[in-house]
Amino acid sequence: MNERRNRKPQRSSPLVPMLMALIAVGVVFFISLGVKAIKDKHAEDTDAAASLSTSERLASDTAAPTVPSKPVPSSTEQLPPDTLPLETTAPIVVTTEAPTTVPVTTEPPGPTMMTVDDSYFADALLIGDSRTDGLRLYSNPGEAKHFCATSLNIYKVMNSEEEAYGYKGIRNLLKNEKFGKIYIMFGINECGYPTASFFAKYKEVVEEIRSYQPDALIYIQSIGYVTQKKESKDPVFASSNIKEKNEAIKALANGVDIFYLEVNDAMNDGTDHLPADYTGDGVHLKASYYKYWRDYLYEHAVVDAKHPWTPSGDSGTTP
Image 1 (tube, helix red, strand yellow):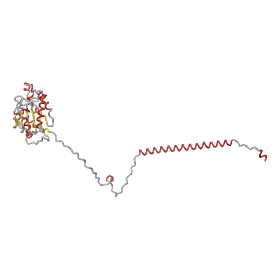
Image 2 (spheres, rainbow, N blue to C red; image 1 turned 30 degrees about the vertical axis):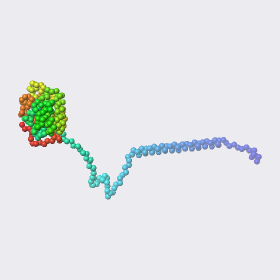
Image 3 (tube, rainbow, N blue to C red; image 1 turned 120 degrees about the horizontal axis):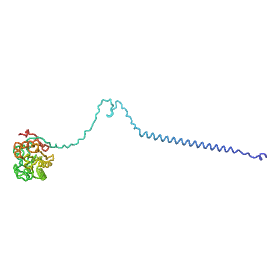
Image 4 (cartoon, rainbow, N blue to C red; image 1 turned 135 degrees about the horizontal axis):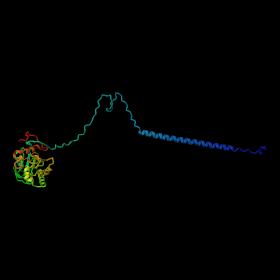
């Protein structure tokens, strides 16, 4: 027993604890590596899933929509008209609504220049000077009435006291009678007047006539040429002067209810002069040549809705 008390305790070797510590550190290290590997794998799986989800979503956005197929009806089932099978023989009736009718405003026919006969002039009035008086005497168009006199001119006509058809002066005639056509020819007695003055007065006269006869067609006839011999003796009658005045009054025509007639086309020697054999004094027509003037009026007559005309069977162009 004393030996046991006197025996000293034995010390353990220091290598064992060190080895155990190293083992513990290694275990911890490997465990941490495993945890990190698991986390990385989880992150990769999450990214892949997110990428796949995005791709699938994009594909679904751009893909054509799925059209559900219609069930094929049985042979005894009645089909609506728009789904009849191709092999059917039943007619397909298409019903359309009648188009809405839009009211159309029909304009009355415009004026037409044509050839007429004597009946056209039954409601006509011819106004002018001695030349118009010659037409009245030798080739009166139909039953046209006249207000004309020797030396009458555009400056005097509205104040003239000439009597015609029971009326004193043209104003009274125009106020009390209704005319469908009014023919005017002035200018040969006004060749010495300035063109501007002549035009202004002519315009005034036309407007006053219109005020009395609002529904009448008004024909402005050109001033007739004189012969070359007459022009050479008296230059005031020169064709150039006459043309200038004709161009001025031509501007008064509107092509609706006022018309210009170039009567010189029927009485022209080819040099813009009156043919010498048509006249005795170089100004007025011989009796047998007024027919050319008259026929020109027959061949240049306006007919429209307000001024209808029906042929009477008379050509109006007798010799």
